[in-house]
Image (tube, rainbow, N blue to C red; front, side):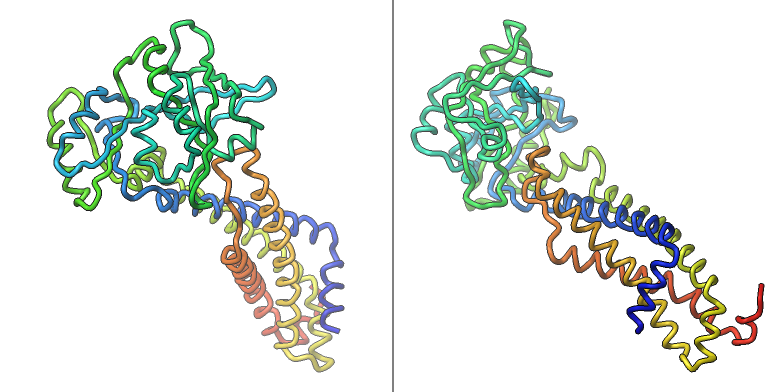
Length: 383
């Protein structure tokens, strides 16, 4: 009987119920999309190689370091292996669409030696080292754009223009995988030799020096490197790879905080909207509630009935919104390869349902308790 009453109450004002449900679906859709993204930024550094250290320009990521810094870093006590890496940027064009994904210029052999997170076949590794125009891409990029070894990849430069004033063209000599599913395979790496010879400006300049320290205390080595370059024309800041990633994300603000602020603002707005809707619905039923109380229904029965109505509406809408979010996240890597691996997950689903039930309690209890505390005669009186 209670179920029939609950469904009948929801159908009483179908337009109002539909609009409220749509608003709730939108709110929990945003929750289902933004919360995994905020967690992605929080955990971005966890999958990085904790053994690698990055020597970066001290003042700005747009500054550059002389390539000779790699040799000087190699001479610091405690440094085991070194390589250098430079941001390329640019746009990939395949005649129908363009897409941005991470592109770095590296010294192939040295970079691969300190990158256990990149799994490359021996023949492809040799080709990358020995082909000046060679490049490798991650498995996700290759699958997304249907790339195969032997293809040519054109890149339109936005920073590094070449001597011909035309697009760069790189030969795809390898497709790398990762030893772990969570490792990023959405990057492209380019051979430094051809890049440095063919660019117009910045010859002999690099973005970062990478190094490993083995069993030595990396923090002490990092401090020694920064002291060595202090007061030079290109001062440095040396960080572990995880700290470097966090610092780069931090330069555009606390993204996780901003995303959660948006989610909280939306949920708070929906709380006000749903609270007003439920209060209005309860006021409209004051005579019916008074009649039911006169027939023997307790205040607890009516409160449970009202709460069941709110829970049914809000949880159904929340579940629908999060289901849509889960479907969108499943295919998000088709638009943004870096989002691969994003999913709602059971903990977030439970959190979302918990928020929905809490929302039902908040919007139901105050107006229902006020109404049920009124004398039956007052409730039956026409207003």
